[in-house]
Amino acid sequence: MDAVVTSLHKQPDAAPELSPVRRPSREEAEAAARTLIAWVGDNPNREGLLDTPRRMVKAYEEVFGGYGETPEEILGRTFGEIGTFDDLVVVRDIPFHSHCEHHIMPMIGKAHIAYFPVERVVGLSKFSRLIEIFARRLQTQEHLTSQITDAIDEHLKPRGCAVMIEAEHMCMAMRGVQRQGVSTVTTQFTGVFRDDPAEQVRFFTLVRGSRKD
Image 1 (cartoon, helix red, strand yellow):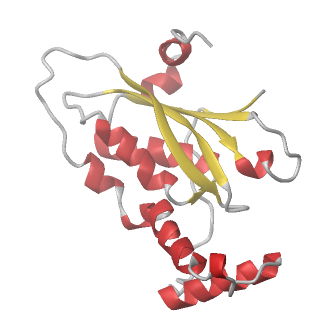
Image 2: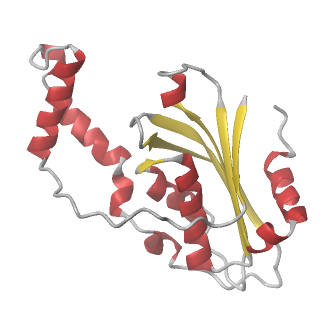
């Protein structure tokens, strides 16, 4: 079962500017973890949970490490030796995991990216790293899709960019309606992909056309 969300145009962020919040210390974060353990009904002082707050904070540093990186660091270096190449580049089936900002539960899926380079290209592994920057933050799938698209448009300035994300959300699978196997699909197109439906079809064909499932 697929839920599909499609955006053909960039949607500007309309959220008001917020005042900065002091980042708690590691000790404060671990104390908060102990509070949550007690709140769910367990005893943070029992043997199996004594070191859990420390491990939890360390894990959060890893899974939310995207706050410490920027797209400029990833897309800043390009290569010009591409001969007469002037067609699209597709990188598909890039695995990622993120966390829903509404329930802080995982979403797990794959991303597919295509772009029409202008004279210069970026190393293909950079797209995986770009996705990691934004995925390792509290997210909605829609915002994740637009952030990746906007970063490629801003830093590579291609003739067009296409981004498609497919993900299963644990906030839907493990709580609430508890429906497993539901896939949410989001897409966003710019430039040639936005203006020419045939290029959108070609993108979808290259992403999904050779699949056997």
